[in-house]
Structure formats: C-alpha cells, structure tokens
Amino acid sequence: MPTEIEEIKELLKGLVVAQKETDAKFRETDAKFKETDAKFKETDRRINKAFELFEGQWGKLIESLVEGDLIRLLRERGIDVHETSMRRKGSHKGENFEFDIIAHNGREIVIVEVKTTLRVEDVKHFIQKLKKAKEWMQEYRDYNIYGAVAYLRDQSGSAALAEKEQLYVIRATGRSASIVNNQEFVPKAF
Image (cartoon, rainbow, N blue to C red; front, side):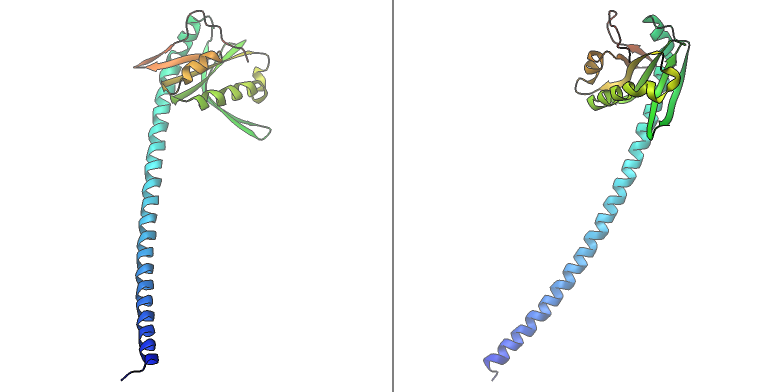
C-alpha cells in the first residue's frame, strides 16, 4: 500500500507531465498564431500596395482632367496663363517639396494641389507649402502666386475651407474640370 508521500510524488509526477503537455500545446498554438499573424500582415501589405497603386492611378487621372482644362479655366477668371508644368519636385535647404501642377504666364503662377479626395488636412498642408513656394522656387520670388485645390470629392467641408482661405476650388467632373468659386471670388496672393 503506497504511503501518502508516495501518493503525493505520483500526483506531482502526473502534474509535471500534464504541465509539459500543456506547455507543448501552448507552444504549438502560439506557433500557429504567429504563422496566422504573419499571413495577416502579408495580406495587409498586399492590400495596402494595391490601394496605393489604385489611388496613384486615380490621382494621375484627376491631374490629367484638371491640367487639360486649367488654362481655359484660369483665363475665364482673369488670369492669362500660357502654359502648365506637371509634378514640380525639388529640395531647398533640406526641405523636399512637390507641386502637382503649376500654371504660369511670366508675372503670376497658380499652383494646384490635386487630390482624389480632398480633406481638411490637405488644405492646411497645402497652404503651408504655398507660404514657402517663393523660397523653394526662387525663379518665382517676384511673381504673384495663387493657390488652387482640385479634387474629385471633398470631405468634412474641405472645399469650403479652401475657398475661405482664398484658394481656387476646382472640381473634376466627368471628362473635365470646373472652378466652383463664385464669379466675385478674389484669390489670395502668396
């Protein structure tokens, strides 16, 4: 007949074996979770890459729609621009900058920020870029610089904010674009 101590030893041995089996199952489950997590992360990466590609292509389409009508639209508003430049990029004193479209005529330019979906943050960020435009692009330091935002759709009153900040507001529609500011609108010169 086993003694109490022997019973306790047997019970402890059983607990140790059960603990080892439980640990092995936890390690196996943890490995499966890590594998599943890695698969989720890879799927997220692929979805994000596809979304960026999609957004980039939409952005280029919107840029093309706006750029194609921009000279006519600005001339209708009294700014006699003659040509446009697309995607002006540069770096000045360690600051990188990029402007989607610039329309110019020798005395004044209109810098256009193009977004598929215009957000309030986009408008605020663009205004900060406009304030630095003459510093970043020295050849325009004696020009009047006007700003414009162009978009397919806007969120949270971003188009109204842009107009309040005295930016031209251009809506891409169908096969073209149109300025939505009223006829009495006066743009701010930066």
